[in-house]
Length: 240
Image (cartoon, rainbow, N blue to C red; front, top):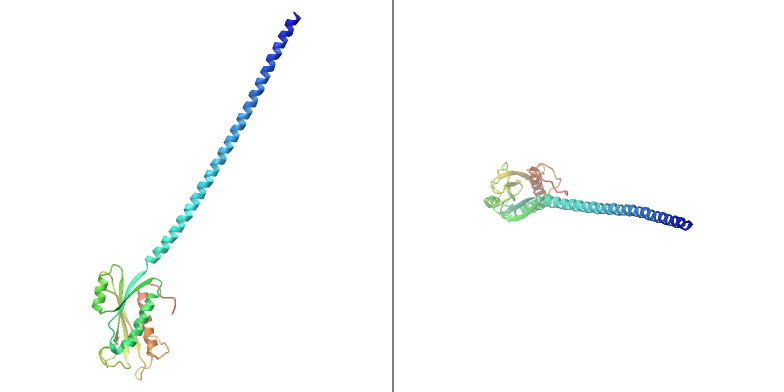
């Protein structure tokens, strides 16, 4: 009888022990599972953050490249916005070839020096040819100059006849519109040559303070270019 009680007690203890072991294993397993899920969630969060950082860097890089491309495009556009002129002069008469040559050269150099202008030198052509040339252009203007005697000086009817001497001369300029050939700008710069009949030596109304022909004609050429550029709202060259 006593042995039966011991057996029953032993069996009860054994069952309790097994229950405790199972319970401990279950609790440990649950703890490990939760820990594993936390680690997995932490890794997932880190992975998501890393991916977001990569995307932000890519967007920043793309934005920088886009700005650089936009800046380059604007720079190219500013270059393409330059105004193009074909610069030419009338056939230069032999009696003023050197003098007018100075004015024409200075005029062309001054036009080409503007930061907003592109020039193409056409040499010497007649007025009707300058007009026809303008008509054949899509966007290019034709700036054409010629030399003549001031209308107030009646001693010589035209620059092409006789010696010039001490005359009041002028550089006439015309700008012909592309496609139509119409005159959109014109004027003249008077040149008072030194002599007994001329008290004030002037070029275009200013007194340069010099009396040699070359300087006078070169200044007249530069002022001609400045008049054209100013009238067409184009920047003047920085150098004087």
